[in-house]
Length: 160
Image 1 (tube, rainbow, N blue to C red):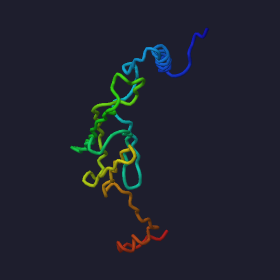
Image 2 (cartoon, rainbow, N blue to C red; image 1 turned 45 degrees about the vertical axis):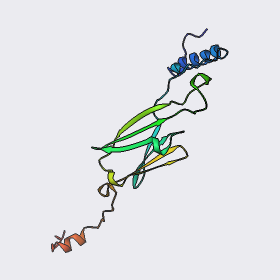
Image 3 (tube, rainbow, N blue to C red; image 1 turned 45 degrees about the horizontal axis):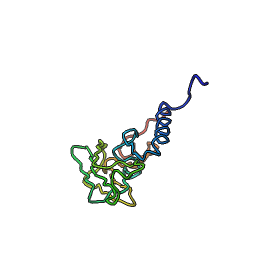
Image 4 (cartoon, rainbow, N blue to C red; image 1 turned 60 degrees about the vertical axis):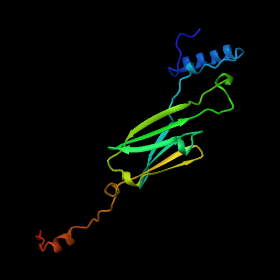
């Protein structure tokens, strides 16, 4: 018998979920309430050279079901997922994909050009392009050995 159990604190919940699956397998009941999940999509945000790129996994979401807005530096993504019409709630054996309305908000960096943003939905993945403002883009600063600056300022170097 083990006294200590090493691993994640959520391992016990996963064990409980497996046991519930095993016990309820023959009863043909769904038990969504026991599942730990997110009602909103998973999001990744990347910083690229010219833009920030936000990606969100949205399987089963149509373009008409999405609403993206920006106000006072706050980006809000709203959407909804619907169930398959030919399958009723009582017929599910397992349901892990959340359904219904969801909303997420993100604070935008100050250096985002919000009027040039655009989004596309490809194969169930939302790609939201957030172009960096021109002032936020890196620019090269020329470096000289200092003698050119003295000549332009009409200054004579002091001999050592």
